[in-house]
Image (cartoon, rainbow over all chains, first blue to last red; front, side, top):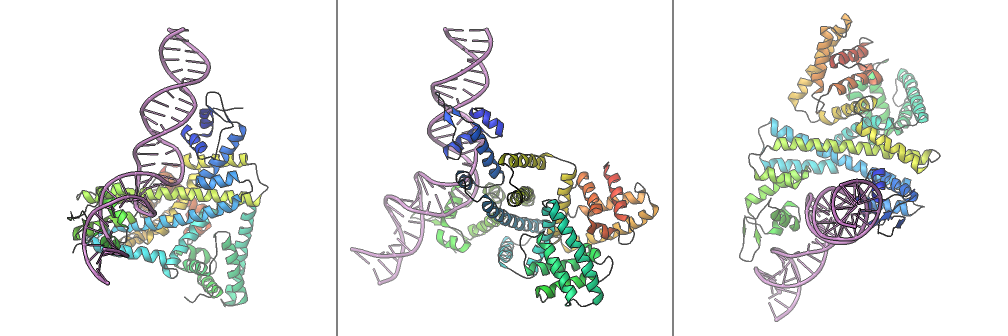
Length: 254
Length: 254
DNA sequence: ATACACCTTTACGCAACGTCAAGGTCAATA
DNA sequence: TATTGACCTTGACGTTGCGTAAAGGTGTAT
């Protein structure tokens, strides 16, 4: 089966310009050129285009795609992981922007307007803080938020098997925590085991683990009543107990 | 106080090229040009540049900034709200990308690799579904996720006053719902009032309200045990009752 | 006088195509 | 057979917000 440029274009859902461009930059050359100078593509090119579009959909740049599709031994998984990191950073940036835009809207609508200069100064300072501060409340809010996001965004992504594992883990945490709570010592062996299980459970939801984030999340269990209600369901005080256990486990002082 | 181009540039933390570009596109012209053709900026221009950079930090395009700073009566707040919408869309897109990248990584790492074509087909289908399907489970997941994100991202952003209002609303929902639950009819007046209050409450968290989203969130109260635990705290069955009330309120059939 | 920092305009480059423009090719029809 | 209309070709400019030379004039301290 052979395709002219438009046939291939409509098959793949791209423009002919795109295909000419891909030819131009050398990531997808036609199988041959006919006597009239027309580009003719074959099955191999169809497959290759699919690969290209696949990575393109993921937002990978064409130069990276070029490496992937031209070098057959290229580590596609690693490239994807790196790309993923970039996406996460981008989202962080976006979240920051949105938060600041929200704040600005609130300011301009609500209050007696500050002078532009004041606004600008405060804003600038805030941006720097957001970007540079590494610990403390700011970051805890962030981690807490991330955790909730992740639990929603990533849970859909689990295999059936993983889902079973994480459910089993949650059950273990539950029983261990209940026993530990009866003993009453958040530094005790059982409580620390519960904290450890909780950490393992977390790794199913978080892209990477940090003690600060773990401690922050634990604090959120106490601060957010929806989580408190869940953990205190059988034994009131369990949420606080779990937080204390985790803070000891992570060596956090707050 | 007068500034040459480099003085102003270092003062504001931008390049001289940027200032020349701003001159070129007409958003910041120097106060005057001296006898040697040098650009000379005054205090007014300093202020204006601060405004420009302020909006630029928020990711607003220079053409929009031009409208904002040149037309003194321009509705800056409205522009910001529109910009905010764009940012939210971008984040949606990003979340989609991240989810798909995650899936791909999981596939390539975990399982016997599918043929590229298979992968591509499934992937393509998924993207289309994500983008085009408007109702059903997919969208419910999405709305549910948004709600959780929003509650975390926006709550920090409320004024003290708003916070009081939303807390009072939550309390009202709680008492109204408890009474309605005793009557037992999710279509009854009290239950519908609770649903209406819940809608009002939601508007503090959601950028825009839709019946589908409201109904979807209600379903999540039943599906996610953390929320169920919260609503069933005093009267088991309240979460289901609230869901039913809201589904009647929104005219949802599921 | 020379060096050196500063200023000017002009113009290409960047990512990934969209969008004309000007012209050749192919198959079907009047 | 000539014409139409759909399809193909190669340029080449426009998009965003500057970075980065290049080529040349100005200011001032030594």
